[in-house]
Length: 418
Ligand SMILES: Cc1ncc(COP(=O)(O)O)c(C=O)c1O
Image (cartoon, rainbow, N blue to C red; front, side, top):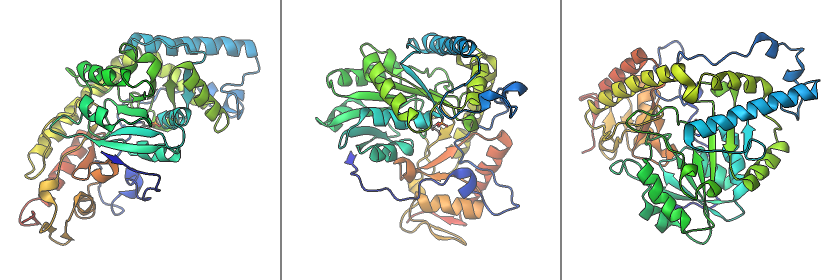
C-alpha cells in the first residue's frame, strides 16, 4: 500500500494508444492498445433532424435541450429520465430518482471527476486498488485528495480483499474506488467478494464508495456483474458511475452518468453547471436510441459481447502460448488482458537490434518499434510487471499481432534475463 502525496505525476501517462503508439506510417499496425470499442455495432444514429445545423437543439450553452416549446421539452425530459430510472431498476436492482439523484455528463470520465470533487476535501484519502484505471489517482490528486494505492495480485484474481481494505483505512479515508468489470485487469467481483468489502465499509461510517461500472455489459458468464449500491445499506454510501462508451461503442459521443445519494448528486451537478453545463443534446438523443435496444443493450450488445468473448479466448490462448508470458486467469469482463511479463525483462534481457529490455516499459517500446504492435505498459496502471492489451480489434488483427509478439520474443532474437 502506498500513500502517494500531492506530487504532480509524470506527464507520460499511457500514451493514448491510437495516436502516440502508432508505428511508422504506411506499415500495417495491429494495435493491442486502444481503450475504444471498434466493434461492428454501430452507434445508434440520431435522426437527421437532430443534426441539422439550424436545429435549436444543437445550440445552447447551458440547457441540455433548449427547445422553443418548454412544455414539450419538459415532457420529453420526464420520459427520458423515466427511461434512465427504469434502466437502473431493471438491470441492477437499483432505483434512483431521476430528479436529483442522476447527473448526466460528457462521458463517465467527467462523472468520476465530479464525484471526487463532490466527496473529497483537501487531504482526504482515496483508496484505489491496483491495477487501476489510469485516471483515478490523477483525478484524486487534482481534487486535493491523497491516493492510497492498495496492490492486488493476479493469483488472487486482481480482487481487493477485505483484509487489505481494512489495513488501508485511516480516519482520513473518504472514498474507495471500485471498478468492476475492471480496466485493466478484466476482473469481475463476485457478489460474495463485494459483500465482504461492504462489511468493511459498514464499519467505517465516513467511507464512501465510487463504483465505476462502465463495463457492466461486457461480462462473460458465468461471471456476473453486480452493483455495489444494491448491497444492504450501500445505496446511501455509493456513487455509481456508468456510461455509453463501452456497451454501445459510443466513446466519441461523450455521454456518461453518475447515480448517487441526493447531496452528492447535487454537488456534482453544481460542479457541472459551472463548468460544461448539460451533456450534448445530440448525444442524449443517440443514448435514447441505445437504451431502446432493451435491457443491457438487447440482442446487438449480446452479439458484441459474444464477439468479445471469442477474442478474449483467442488472446488468452495466444498469450499463454508465448514462453515467459503469464496470464493465470482469463479476463471475466471488459476487453483487456494484463499479462505478467516479468520473466522476460530485467538484467540480461536483450533484444536483437534493440538492446537491453530492463522492464515492461522497455518491452512495450520494443514491441512497438520492432514488432510494430502497440501495447500499453502496465506501469501506467500501477502494474509495472505487466503489459495491458486491448482486444477491441478484429480477430485477424489480433492473430497477426500475437504472431508478431511471439516472433519478437522468441530466441535467438530475444534473450531472456540471465
Ligand atoms: C474504467 C473506466 N472508467 C471510465 C472511463 C471513461 O469513459 P468515458 O469514455 O465515458 O469518459 C473509461 C474509459 O476508458 C474506463 O476504462
